[in-house]
Image (cartoon, rainbow, N blue to C red; front, side, top):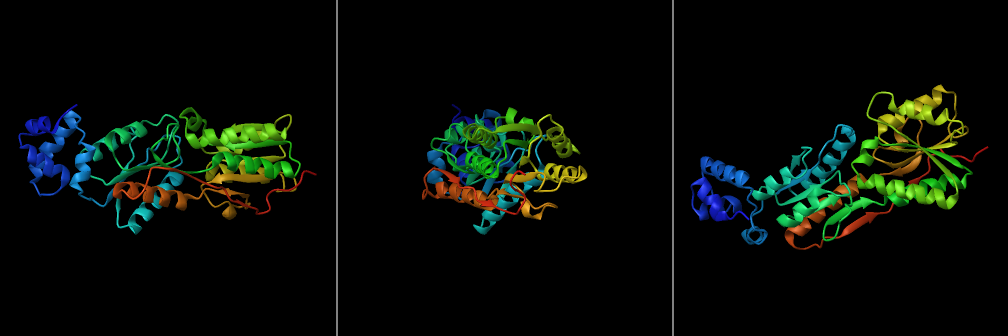
Length: 335
């Protein structure tokens, strides 16, 4: 393990100067700080977590680890970012956005230079590398999402399995036996994004319990993907009498337009349901019954958890939010 002595030697400064640079207790020249930062990066030095806590220096900056993938939906991504910024600003904090696909480099860099007081991470996967990293660095961190190994990690998320179960039960109650699902791009599944896995598990379990058939289509990130997914479902030999949307807003809007172009009335001919929507389903051209993602509560909770851990007044726990179903008249009984 690299020591502070090695950093000092590589930077050509004293150990105390490196300590001052890390803690912020004394001002040092820009040139000296740049030499120290360069030595830290090149050597891969990680400050001792206990030493950082003893230093007690605050930066009033939170890092937001928000990797954006090629198949990600930027408006949804930025809604999360905006809510984290809002929650941080209300607590007199600025936010440093870490948006590289490499999810660990940015966290390691800002932690090694004591640039931030904590980290909020989104876009969580089953085997998320950031979990082991924040543990090893001793960084105050909170995840918007629940990784597979969440022990000792602060997490907050919607109960996606319950959201899927509620969607299926609502449709089954009105006699629907074949239910279509238009989902996020399949890359979300390939990356093992945990919200997708939990939703799909809940969907399968609820369908098996009710004895109904689920038919999937995946709306990739391309113009017309929602319409194509709707056509694929409705042109099947046994078309669904209801469709659950678990995808981003443009795909839902395209699918709604295609349903109308095909001369189908909602909900008389086809029931539609929005599950864990990151948008307002009530503001669509066809307002949808469904469950909206409690984005503001999720982001606020994550910011509070990270700051609580930083201040030593909170424990690393997992908080799962209960879904709330709102009926807007887009679901009806099968005729």
